[in-house]
Length: 341
Image (cartoon, rainbow, N blue to C red; front, side):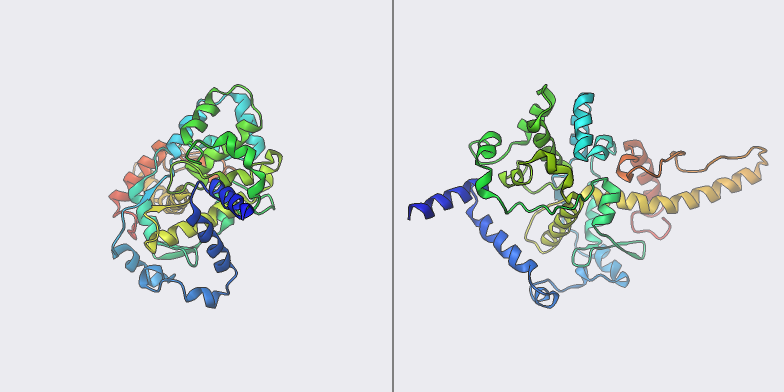
């Protein structure tokens, strides 16, 4: 009897004093093991989740829910500016170099809300201007610069192995406070395992896999126990699946806040529409050149971004000014879903 009480107590601490969450995770595991036919019995059926490009209007014209998310690239970027060069080198070793160069500013919530509305979580398709684009963890890897190292992330394992870490990182409520992590990352001089865990936790909460709660549950410490293995984890697959599941639950009305990296969808939109913009802008500019009979050759014609290193992850190449100017162009040409863009 005493053993059962101790086990229940451990689980409560592990999941941030939320016993109900244990049952939901078990249900989630059972759902993953079902066949596609069996899964279909539990899924919503409706025009707003059908992955068919002919039904894009159903997404755009449907009732659009107010989107809430904890994804905060501006807060993360602000923290990065306060890190020393030595700390940044350690972040690069962890495999998060691309995150150090995020400079796109605050999340554009009206755009992200529209993108979520046009994303089908059951087939990972997003509808942009009459086209259905299939997304995968490989796209997340390319866009965000977060790699898959070969080892899956499973936060359900190792409950008994994080007692010491939980006591170190969690407050009296059983959660890891974001403000505490932020202060520690800036003020701590020693770049040790504590710094590595704190950085990854902060990145998860603001960029990689933010959830509805501002502070973090202790189960993330499971895969951060061994800091030397952090860059061997399948971060892209974990984050992508988390976003897809987050959108699915949001659309089903199960969650009011979208879990996952909504910033990924925003950059997907920029990258896709920017190609169309380059073609239109270049064509118009060439016409002007011909009309005024200019006698000099133009090296490149693009939208305020002349030289872009294609080897870089797209998340690192979009500045806040680029985003603002580009969205201004999009709105002048009919908005996000316009065929002119």
